[in-house]
Image (cartoon, rainbow, N blue to C red; front, side, top):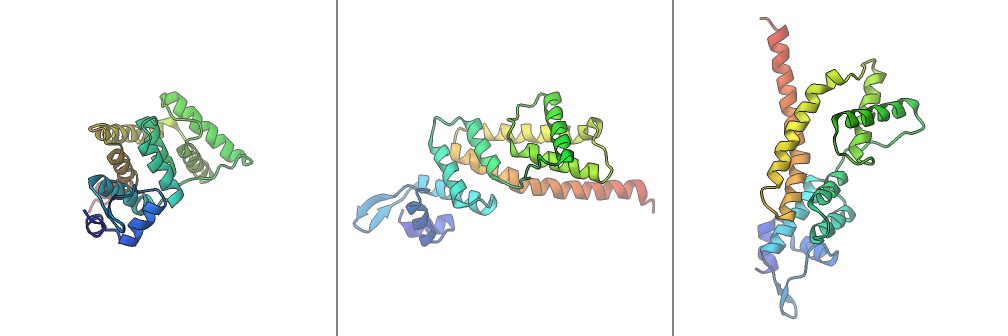
Length: 210
């Protein structure tokens, strides 16, 4: 297909596609003349991945370049590839090692992960994100008790198992990363919306006796 058709099918302007080629995010097409090239399904799939990373994930070009390079490197295992994509996404929490409350919260997070036996690397951004939430809850006088966390842990495990199982259905690395971005960003909004509506329903059933 010509670049104009690639533009129509991907939903991206021709100039944007040319920019991605210059930046090394998208391979060059097969030259058919001095100023013309042909593109195929591989280019379309790559553009869809880039579009997901940029528009859904909100990632800068530098992060997209790193992920695309990992996709193209078969030596990068799928688990590590998906980790690169997930770790590039927000939100993030800045560590505050000088704050005793934050340090205590981070120790609690590490203890919970160890208790669960989860395989999570020490520098995973989610550790600091959870520590920030723990510290804020304690600041409001709300203690962190594993028993109270259990429903959230069980829900998280159930959702994660469902999502990862879906990723392993095929071996298309680009599609796996694209799906991971969509589930991490869009389905987190789905989960938030469902949780809030479920809360409203539970409150109505318990308190709104009329």
